[in-house]
Length: 347
Ligand code: DAH
Image: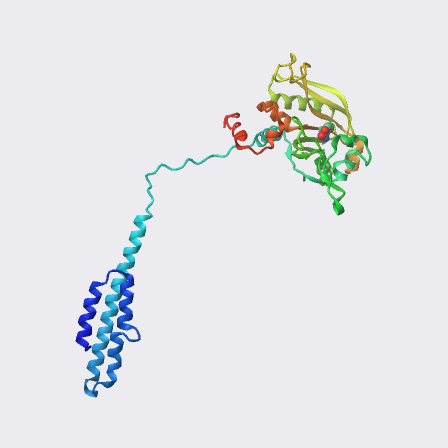
């Protein structure tokens, strides 16, 4: 083929190309090892010297021409492919969106926040201790030495081997010890400690894991009257103003004197019903004046300071307040259960 023939066929061939593949095939046909333009290039050396320059220029022109048309076509084909793809994958923004589901607070989160808000409004701070505790903090420093019979009521889960002195705390009272020890000035304390606790229990009203909140107040002139006033206020705020509160003498190793606190049954209002076993009262709290041994073991001078403490199961309050019959549903992780409390506090 001479130069003019190559030029003609090139224009013709490029005109007929339908897609990227055909275009690239043409590139091989013209510029490949045995391509038509390559062959012209090889012919240069055989052309007489006086024509060489002109011949060479023409070959170059043809190559540039091929490359220019090739590039133009390639861009056009690629744009077409992209446009087709965009058209196929177009997003129809007129479609109604999927409803975004709002989460809801777990009833235990709600009740914890309610307790915290109440106590914070009375000047308390909130402290959370760890769930894995030492035997020392959970029992010994609360006046429950090893072998003390009152430990039986709080059998829990124990760690093994080198951690055998550690356990899952059976009561938030352990946090009292931490708060007192961390207070290096050994001054006044006003704190509530909510959190999970563990025991070897499992039935409709007991779970191996449940939640308590502990209160501790230490100061120079704290009396049983302060404890009574605080607990009365707290029961009325959480369970309703009509709630009556009753104190019964009791025993806890870490308080002296100790009391158990009952409230009038919120179901029958105190008349007697199956929930309160016809007594009109429901036990909700343990409390008392902090035992001098407990103060001393955590570095407080019991001749200068007194304190009161209380502890209660928050799950029970949640069960009463929200009408939950089985404690196990609280920890069952069923979203249908959790969602039910969404509207209870007007959120
Ligand atoms: N820790 C006790 C329990 O789990 C409850 C309790 C009783 C806490 C008396 C106190 C208290 O702070 O003074 O059964």
